[in-house]
Amino acid sequence: MKIAGLFSFNGGQKVVQAQYSDLLQEIEECIQAIDAAQCQTKKSHEKTMLGKMLYAPRRLNAQFKKILSQRGWEPQRIKCEYPKQYYKNYKPVRECTNAFREIDFVKRKLGIEIQFGKYAFMVYNVAAKMTIFKNEGIIDTGIEIVPIKDFSDEMSSGVSYFEQFVWDLERRGTSDIDIPVLIIGIAR
Image (cartoon, rainbow, N blue to C red; front, side, top):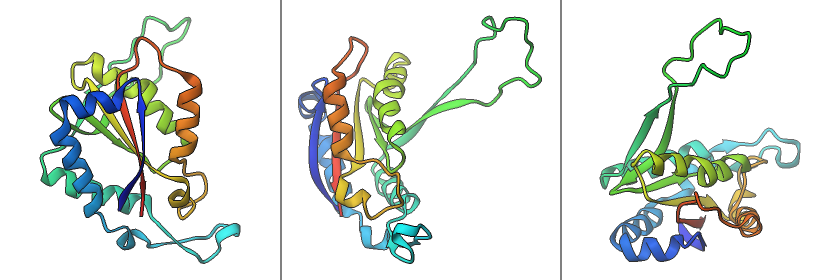
C-alpha cells in the first residue's frame, strides 16, 4: 500500500515530524509492507456491486495489527467508570461493568487509529477519543490512517474516506482541546 494524502489537523504533521520522525518512518514502512491484494476477499452482496470482490476492512486491520505489533506498537485501554449521580428517579437494572475505550496503537505517546468504517468513527477518533487519551496521559499526538476515496469505493458501501474527512475537519476548525493529529490517506 502507499500513502496518497496527508492532512495536518491542529499542526499534527509538524509535531509528528519534529517529535516522532523515526516513528513516522516506521509507520510509512508498515503501510508499504501491507499487501492489499491479500485483503480483497469479501464478495459483495450489495445491489450496486453484486458479486464484486471487495477489500475486507477486518483483513486490512489484521495486517496493520500484525505489522505494527512486530515493531512494538500496542493497543491501550482505559477502563470506563460511568457516573451515576446524573440519574433522576432511575436505578439501572444492570450496572455497566467492564466498559472501556481503546486506541488501536500507542508508542512513546504517539497514538494511531486505523479506520475503515463509517464516517462518524473517523470524527469520533480525532475529536473525542484522542483527546480523552491525551487527558489520561497516554498520548500527546495522534495519527489517523484512512482510505482515500478510490480505495473506499472498493470496500462495502458506507466506508468513509480521506477527502470527506479533510473537508469536514477544515470547516470544523480546531478547538483548544484538540490535539495535533496527522491524517494519512492510503491507497492500494
